Image (cartoon, rainbow, N blue to C red; front, side, top):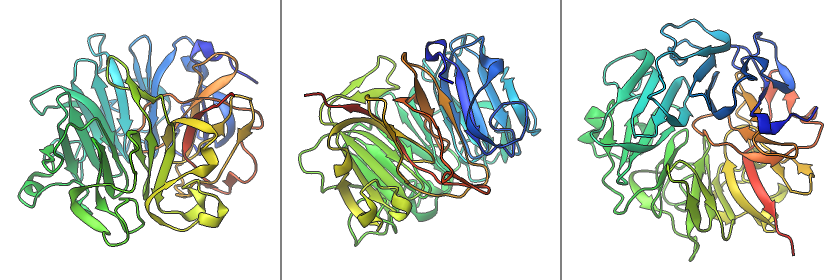
Length: 407
């Protein structure tokens, strides 16, 4: 069952306890299944939170499905949905260029730099001050256009178009990178002043944050996810990651307790939402090494406290990596291979595929927390083997998009 990916069809599978697959039921689905109700529209963006899903189509429509206990679907109430519903708040004037999702939060960033967030605000993670939650999108204004948004478990970060980094939400372990005085106002976006140069990207993990100017990290580092060595297990001050030699980093991403970097020169789209590494394409990982999530081989399941080159991928050019739940790394020779990257064992884990390229590839999108890019890859059947689904738990991995070197 190879879908016509050029039609922009959406495929989903996994746990479905809250209806987060959008298939009209709450039954677990073990193989990628087409969301038929969306067939008339080409899906452009898609993200998953802990138990909800957001998608944006080429027609300019935003749809949501799944858990809604904190209003994270943006539909005006807290009733969960098992099928995709239109979020009426956004009109044709709101051209969305990026989506993000946290545990129970949602965010949409428009092409003209307006940021809207909704859902859980128990820790201030949607930047709306003392509001407990928001059941419809609310604009988050920092006085200047926004060009990037990332949602972690219970904290968030945004980048303005002039390269300033703002963080807000849960302040434990220094993951906001703010001074003690600023932490008094952690429920609204606060400027992170500890990074001297323009910030291009930010990635929020479970208890840490990664910013790309040079690579700066801050927050919790007990598993090595900060990449700062064995003497710094927590910092509220952004610190630059060494140990990378002369490599230029063009892409960053973070999971709950681990981090990945990709080297190379970047081509950035005109809307500044997507970049592709064009040169080295080397991948470095560090942090929690359990379950092989760092991709360093079976002999290195231990935590890594500095960036380690993933030598298993030296014969590829790595373009993108996602460090959340389930992923596949695929060669252009149509051979698929799977490696165990992590197990979060969240009962609400789900995953989905969005087709976007010709010749039977798919795009895999991570579940959580905040990654709205489309990842093209070639996938051969069967999609999942018995090791992935055991009871109500799923074995999870990051997503790699790689290109074979042809000599």
